[in-house]
Amino acid sequence: MRRLIHATTMIRMLRTSRKAVACAMAFALFGCDKPAERTDHDAHSSWGPTMPLRVGAEGLSFPVADLLLPGEACLGATYASAVGANDTLDIEDGLVVLDAAPASGVGNLSLILEGGTRDVPILSRGEVSHTFRHRLNDASQTVGIVGNLNGWTPEPMEPSVDNPGAFERTAIFSPGKHPYQLVIDGEWVLDPNNDNTLSNGMGGWNSVVDIPTPEAPVLSSFGRGDKVFLRSTMEADLVVYVDDRLAFHGTIPEDGVLPLVLEGFDEGRHHVRAWAAQQGGISQDLL
Image (cartoon, rainbow, N blue to C red):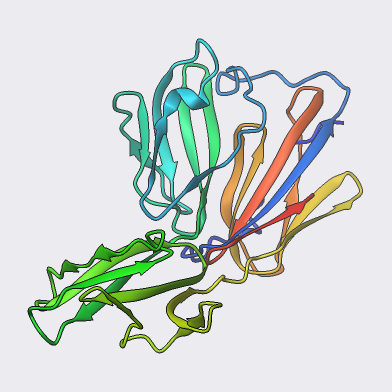
């Protein structure tokens, strides 16, 4: 019995500003009857399961050769950073550059090969850009910042371009609590503009930036007869892969069900994976 992912019209295309990620992975053993004829699109050598790439708030750059088999050539690439998007990428000096993480937390990179395409899951790291800002009372003072953002090594804050008289420092944070202090004329002090504090474990206190961990959707599967279905606990963007081929990129509604009808693959073991994304964070389930 052969089976292949097929997305039906019951999956509604809804909002895509989601950022959490739930991941599901499975191995499907496909039947023993005669394999379907391969099309030109599928003629390239199978990579097997393509591991996802994770993109942070500052984007990602990597050699395209990292995703090619010996002797393969990449003719181009497209990046779907959101449902319905499909931007053409320029590959310069053999590098693929993704300027930003997917808008929903999950997207797809398609490499155009001589014999077809190879699809790569793209997951957001869930990072957030945060700007610290402080205005000095005396122009002769100096201000810096110290914390886990810089390994607790004091660094000066820079004059603000848009806010004359203020000093700023921008940092990239993952979800969690990030302690810090300002450094005024060499003295470590709590940030007077931030009431949130955290014990330093030695009887003192630090100011803290708290980046919340958003609730992640839970993606589950169940079988009925010879069919497999996916269900999400939240409205979320969804991608489904069989080996290195994207089978579905769309939106699954809250408590919606996506039937997976699998056919058209050669006999043997294939890897079926799906990620649902909403508002940052990553959870993983095994199908």
